[in-house]
Picture: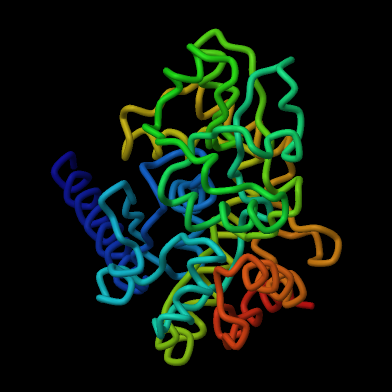
Length: 328
């Protein structure tokens, strides 16, 4: 009798395993590369992975971490990944360079890019920083710096070297440097320094970031896969703000250096700043984007001398996927 029970149990487990294998084989493998090491700012992707949301949409998603030596556009164009996280200016630059990259969703309605200043030294707005020395890295100098020159009258002689450290900021209260609003306050607190972030998005910097980008070939040949990836990632972001625990555990698996208190800070700050939910014009939803906003940002970049006026800027994005995932 015991032998029979073991046989039945064994058959049952084998059938279950075969069923699970069959289900896994039904999923479409997809690889997406993030902008940096795993962090809360990638929480929607990790929540969709951790909670099985991607699987519910028929996708077997592998999340590949970015980093300082990772060129996501090269990975995408070389076929190493199917999707990447990006940002609006990169999408426009791709069109300008003849690279067939297209943005299919925009999850950060506000770019987290900031300038960090000390309290009570007269650095209370972007207008106050005109003519003041500031530490800006190369990436910032080709992204938002031309816009700051155009909109706020900044000049290149203000630029100083930047070493991705708060050391000089701690030592000199006149220091101004690039930051990221979703972690500035955390690192200032760790350093015991009182300061604040001037969020560029609050001053007219209209760039979308944490975009989901793919190739024109993918959009043309497999639009259903793109639709499912966009929809599942939007659901992932909604789930992350309801319960970040499962995603954070997966983030820490990929990036063991990540601290629980930094994850908690960034999670709260994204909500406090309203960084992800689109404005009323875009339906107040995750991942939404509008032609008007893309056009406004393009015109700002033309005015800043970053992009040519005759650029076919509408090639940079495809609104059909985010317009369609909510069924209206």
